[in-house]
Length: 390
Image (cartoon, rainbow, N blue to C red):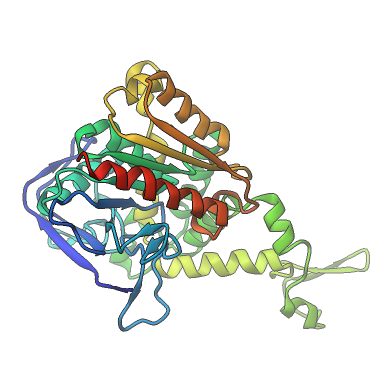
């Protein structure tokens, strides 16, 4: 499936939850499949922290450019584009095409950088609905997302209840735990204390806080993988480079009680994390990272209702599919069950699946037969069936 990136400019000002106003902005998006004449088969995919609008397919001029959820969305796949019209949209504040810190500030003619306003999950959902309006889609067959994307799916269900018939919420939580906020704060501090950060205006110095981004990604990546999966994949194995090296003259190699050790990466897990961090630092924007993780921290629909999540979901009319994974310790099954309980307390139509998978939080992105069968069955029976009454 060939993907084609699109962009839409919005000139109607958008007031953000922070009180700031974007006088104009663009959203990058992609679509897959065809919108039916009744416009009842649209599915909106919301992305997680470091993903984008490129959900599925490949770009014609880039053979190895599969979308981040290519195993889930496409012809004959669980979200079947032979039937559904799928929309992937990049969130405001991102660095992948939608207006964000890297974009030109019309007030100054220079990149926003650190001056780009804070954004929230609610701001993203508001902008997504404006995109749907421009595409002529009054009601979605479904909104779907994992992790931060699942939070957006929840938000759309109660913020715009008449705009969605089904909400598929995967590996998500009704808010972040203190531990999760702590992980995000450590990652942000790694970026902000990098000497090349310059208060977020690093572009004026022609530099990038690379080391901070690397550490932030390494911290995040550790939380996405289960302990068992990390042990299975890496254990205490040494990297190939370390096994071959017999050079004890490196400046960072020391000897204590006859044991030689180095602060260079020796274990496979060290090399893997440094590789992931270095790769991330080449394509992700530091100011975007700060804003997206803060949006995660701030999301708490129950806060406006005295901590009562059921009251937050009260306006929703959609049917729900909630999925969790047994080894996901960042957004554990217990957090998904909080969502399910709130929906049941509201007497909403909800289906819950707890998938036994070894991969941790990243399981929502990976191949798992039971997980994919669950999503496929829900779309084939619940979502398609609802088109008849749309």
